[in-house]
Amino acid sequence: MEAAQALADLTEISAQIEAAVLASEDGTVVGSTFSEAEAGERFAEAAAELLGSATGPEREGLQELVQLQALTPQGCVFVVRDGSHFVAALTGRDPTVGLVFYDLKTCLRLVGQDKTAKRQAGKTAKKEAGGRS
Image 1 (cartoon, rainbow, N blue to C red):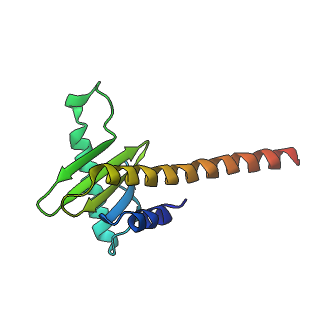
Image 2 (cartoon, one colour):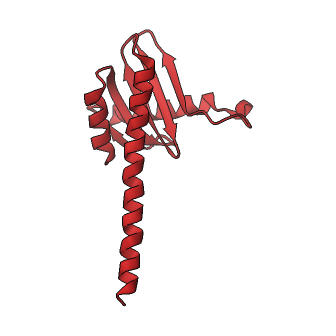
Image 3 (cartoon, rainbow, N blue to C red):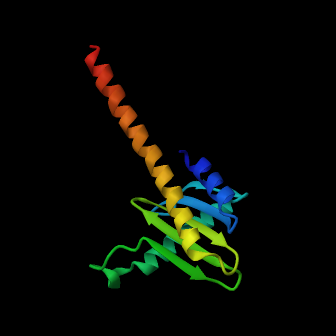
């Protein structure tokens, strides 16, 4: 599933998620539900910085951080990391935390399955092309 479709599905099934962004570890946006690209980029950079701060050098040797929640006066920020990407989302106050994390993990899993399927299709095509020579 493409990033844009996975994020659209995410916001459709999770009424608690107001906006979300899928990005690479360095904060480069892969997909966003923000109406303005710049807003999505700023949010992705902030989420990447938040992850970096939470996994700083003082945590070296400890288990890798895969999810976090930050509370703000306006609502919550959620970030879930899987491999080389993360998905970050904004919610209102008092979200159902476990459900939001589940929905974010599902979004990442769907995007990851799409990438795996594309890699496998590419390998199959190369093998088939090689066998026709």
